[in-house]
Amino acid sequence: MHRSILTMPLPEHDKAAGSTAALFPTRAPEGKSADRPPFAAQAYPAVPPRIACRIVRQLIVEMVQLSGERVLRRRDSRRATCHIRQIAMYVCHVILQISLSDIGLAFGKDRTTVGHACNVVEDRRDHQDYDEFVAAAERIVLSVLTPAGYGNDE
Image (cartoon, rainbow, N blue to C red):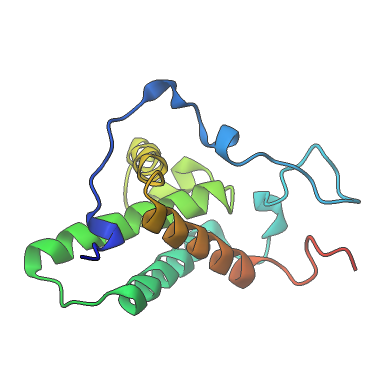
């Protein structure tokens, strides 16, 4: 039986697990400055954080709709909306390096809610299907929002 990635159980929270910095090391591409993460927010001056967050959320919604195999009931629909928002917040913070406060403003939430969303997504990445979905979302966001030529060795 195949379970939806959005309904996987939440593992016990481990506060000693550390931050996202441990999961995503900031190694600079060859020829780039090592003092700046490879996906720093200053690499996206043309897209304001609020617009970037909206784009990311819509990309996640489309990905979930493409991967979904059943019509969601009302209760499941609300839960899925929450999980989509959490994944979008996580991708905005980890990949686009947008501050928790800016993400909170874009989603109409507090920065502590954004921090909680990031922790929830990190904890759920222990499940292979969920991790593959989030990794695919990260790749798509990078391909859509990364300026042409950034990170290429051309």
